[in-house]
Amino acid sequence: MLTPDQISEVHRLHWVEKWSLRKIARHLHIGRRTIAKYLDVPAAKPAPRDRAHKIEPWKAAIAELLEKDPEANAPVIAQHLKPLGFDGGLTIIKDYLRLLRKNSVARRAYVRVEPAPGERFDVDWGHFGALVYNGATRKLYGFCLVEAHSRKMYLEFTHSQTFETFARCHIHAFRFFSGVSREIWFDNLATAVAEHDGNLVRFHPRFLGFARECGFIPRACHVRAPWEKALNSYCTS
Image (tube, rainbow, N blue to C red; front, top):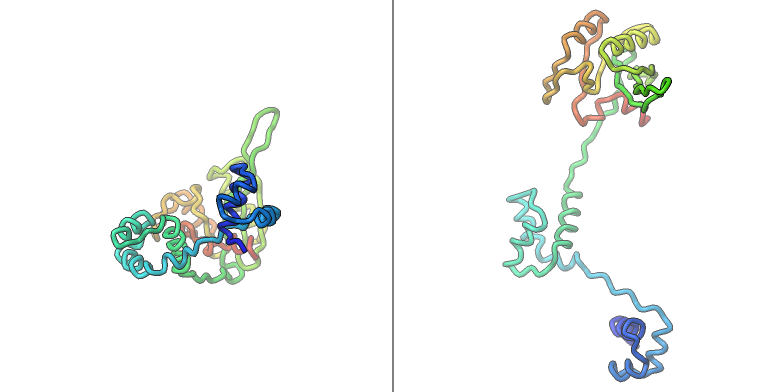
């Protein structure tokens, strides 16, 4: 029985190099009937290299390097391992680092937003392309307000995101819900939030005046914190 390497060589010499069966038999010292038999079946696929086994002896050294520099990449680690006798390539180091960092990422637990009735509204803008009127193109926006307890939604389409339009949409939503919630949360909308740096939030003075007049407390969600948004809970519930 021929080994996988011998079978691959037979196929290569016959189909790629165009050698005759006689020449292959003479070169490899294998009978022509045997060669003919193995040419009738596909060449065996090369066995995958055991990268995990190759990286095993170096895991301790890699762990030590990562302890000193957690952000070290594969080229940096390879540079440190080569003088110690490592003869592998960058790919096996990259694969190991990817697996290592994937397993080390701590999963964060989130609490579903469940405010009491009338406690919280969530507001955001949506973009819906544009409409054409007599050859003139106008952008189309959607003002969305969600009552966070019931997930009931008010949606109003507009062609503007000015403060006047923003305030008017709020008033229409308040009428729709027959009241105002204690808090209204905003996803860092430029119409409402002037500055958001960490936990520091500064609302536009004009918007604060509108909030005082209507009787609600404005809140701003943190950047990249979808778990704080009832709108997000509404869409995934």
